[in-house]
Image 1 (spheres, rainbow, N blue to C red):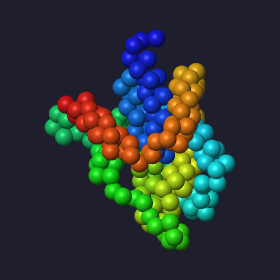
Image 2 (tube, rainbow, N blue to C red):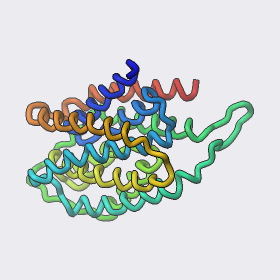
Image 3 (cartoon, one colour):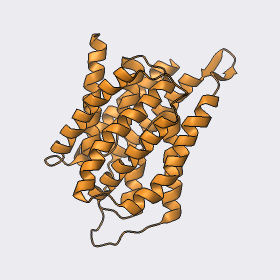
Image 4 (cartoon, rainbow, N blue to C red):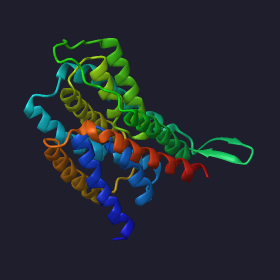
Length: 265
């Protein structure tokens, strides 16, 4: 095994820990790891990211299920439109994207470059939101607000972004659940993890038949990330995930800048 691939498996462990601690952020690390450490094409990379994040998040979602932290009404209202959207995008839209999108003079925007640049833009947005570190705590005495139109629209948006670039979307889901729905942070993280697990795996099924999957590699990588999420869930009893977001935000920002540089320059 090459040294760079060893770093890739270390990254698998880290992304699992991140998911376990914060309920989001795993796919922000999975896509660059697959693309730049294992040299996998972006379309396959986004598919692998969905499987790894979905499977790993399922472990955390099961633990949260046993703790009674998942709000199933929110999970269904947000999850169902997200599930449908991500499946349709992966199954029908992604295969239709041409290899070359357009040409301006000597510059050719290819599909793989466009996907990675879009992913880097989303990473940049996620990093800024984490670095700014808004106070997402809500008054525990306030009742949960089921604003169904907002929740459904959020589900469609997250499903579309998941389908195109392979992100779990927790950094989009959690603020909505806390600020709009008024869930507590622990319930928001738990519900987000539940939605991410199902949405990502459903999105991956849309790729079956469109891609040739290296199952031995994918399962070994996923196994390492599952160990990581177990470790992250254990550490969450001692470390508040919110306290790590600013540090993780800077890491995501650096990786995003690296992607911009590699793809554009």
